[in-house]
Length: 150
Image (cartoon, rainbow, N blue to C red; front, side, top):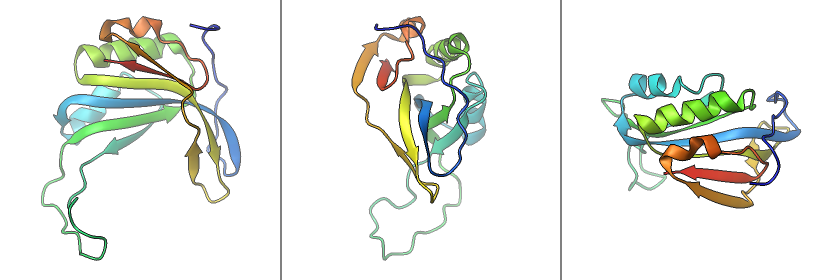
């Protein structure tokens, strides 16, 4: 691990800005109902949450109408983003997720550029480090380094 933990300053979602944010992808051990997925993610408080759902009609072409599902499908994974305020709290949250609901987690401090239209472009990762599930305490928060805990 190079350097020490890095705390990022609070990031505003202003348009036309550059910065770095913590980017966390959580893949659940099995798809969870929305309420249960959100409850599991509460161990990582203070982040924007984007729940990923399966597409309702993945084999249809763009011109075909997509039927509205009768029941919302369960959530297989989620993405959390935001400023890194407390590295130890994030490490503890990762350990809690990996001890119960998560199959694997990807986490790192990632650069971004938010355009004047509000579109966010994320910079690519420069290095991947794979750790065992029980090694969340070894996660560093260096810019452009993604940790995969599996």
